[in-house]
Image (tube, rainbow, N blue to C red):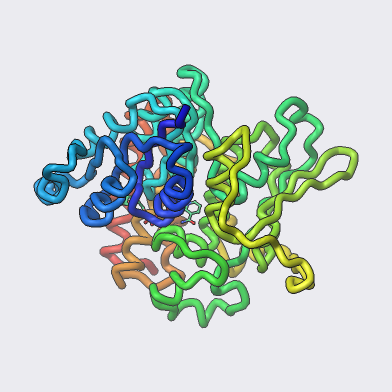
Length: 386
Ligand code: NAD
Ligand code: MG
């Protein structure tokens, strides 16, 4: 029987990699729903190619164009955030949650309520509402699999039957495009420079997060949500080649690493076929050509986002949600040319200093904290950070 699949955020970088794999094996996968924010042309083309039953735009103003484009195809068009959640809740075998930002929280939760396997590429919901997300998965019998390359690597190496035998989880980080730059030079970097990642091709937001290393900070918190280890057992290691995607060290001194090309189709394929395996078009790793793998300690002075994320993880409660919200606002402002690169982390630090609510115990509370943190961060962007 074909595995029924839905892709939330089908027009993005991860969404495109997922479609590529699915379209290589049409006899294995049946596409139920594809969603996007407003990229009607890309969404409709993918829906027609894959024979999807539903195509949904989150931005309702784009629905008339989607309807027109899909007229006569038999594919149902819908629009608005609620329609995205309805598409997510249909109860398919496998859902890819690849919307960017906390905007993906509602639909990721809806997919979890629908049951089946829910693959979270979208890390921000795990950062801001991690315990609520994992508790919902337990309640609804959904299986969460991580597509983020580091967490997918850890998942492949982690002994869930004996988590107490794990001594360390080592998250590898490429260090981003500015890993060798000094702080003064970083102040002047442009959005185009920040988005030009040396190893990975990704959407704009995560590319900027990689450049500030906030991505690794968010991933630290993401790892704490996904794997039952103490926070102190989570370490970050700079590994510029992005060949080792992360490692798990056991008490006996054994270290298991997952390696592979830096192409998201590898971790996505792991989740698509899980617990089986499927082929990808990746060439085998050429270890001789690679010749060496480098490692270095992360630098929390040049990359303060690492310190902010570690502190938010340790403090817990609302801190990760505030950090994520402020960072989303700051990254958008940087991409719009309204902040310099160093101000991205400064906005997050400043928002954390100004706002310290109690821990959220419901999704509504997470949304309220997110909204208030965005408001504070937005004001700081307007006023200009010191
Ligand atoms: P992207 O910007 O390329 O794509 C984002 C997708 O979400 C698009 O389909 C877009 O239409 C949709 N979208 C945007 N705003 C939306 C909204 N408000 N409501 C509904 N849909 C919306 O992003 P990406 O690089 O594919 O990343 C997606 C997620 O996966 C992020 O959380 C990112 O951190 C994570 N991730 C990405 C990569 C990567 O290689 N790109 C790797 C690991 C994790
Ligand atoms: Mg990652």
